[in-house]
Length: 303
Image (cartoon, rainbow, N blue to C red; front, top):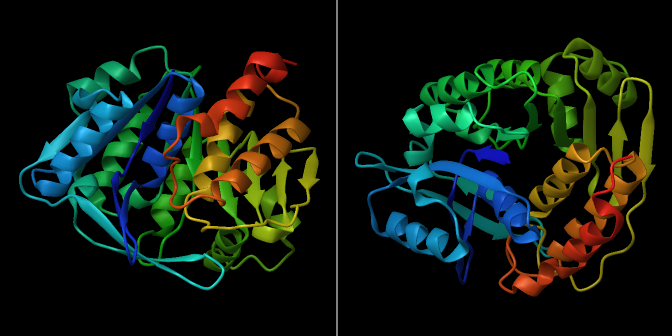
C-alpha cells in the first residue's frame, strides 16, 4: 500500500476545468495502474467539493479519507498555458487542503502496512498543514519509506518546510528549476552535481530524481549517477501533470528495486505520453494498458 497525502483541487484552464493536485494525480495514476493506494486530502463543503466527492467515488477512492471543511473553500488553480503548452499557475490561498487534520483515520492508516508515503510542499505552505504532514511522517513505521515531491510553487514554500521534508524522506524528486531555487536558498556555489551529492549525504537520501524537461532526467544515489536523454515530443497537448506521472513510476520502480536505467526509461515514457493528452489525468483507462502489461511482464521482478 502507498499512502499519498496532500492537495486535491480543480485546475481551471481557459476553456475547461480538470481535477488536479500533484498528490491526487500521483494517486490516480497508481490506482489505474493497479497499485494499492490510499489518498488523503481535505475539501470544502461547497459545490466544487461535492463535484470532487462524486468523481472520487467514480474513480473508486475511499471517501472516508477525504475530510470536509465547513470554513474553507475547495482548492483551485488558475492555469495559463504558453505556446508550447507549458503551464503557469495561480494558486488560490487559504483553502481546505491547507487544513488537513491528523484524525483517527490518518492515525490508523499510518499504523497499517504502508510501504511508502508520498508528500509534497504545497499542502505544507500553512503552519497547520506543515504540522500535520510532519506528524504523519514522524509516526510512520521504520520500514515505511517516504517520497518527497518538492514541487515548488511561487509563494507556497519556505526553507523550514523544505529542510524538514528532506530530513524525513528516502527519495526526493525535483526538477532543474527547483534545484536552482534550492541552491540559491542555501547559497550553494558549486555545480549541480556537487549539490545533489550534498543533498544525498546531508539528509541521508537513498535516491534523488532530477527531471530536466527536454534535456532528459537523471537519478542519483550516493555513489552512482544515471542519465537518460529525452526523445523529441510530437503532438504535445500540454505538460500539466507530467512530473506527477513521472513520480508515480519512480515510486513503483523504487519499491520494486528496479535498476535505475529501468526507472528512467519507464518514467520518461509514461510522462511523455501524459503530455500528449489534455490535463494531468487520462480520461480513457486504456491509457494505462502499456504500463499494466509491462508490470505483468518483467516490471515487478525484483533485482
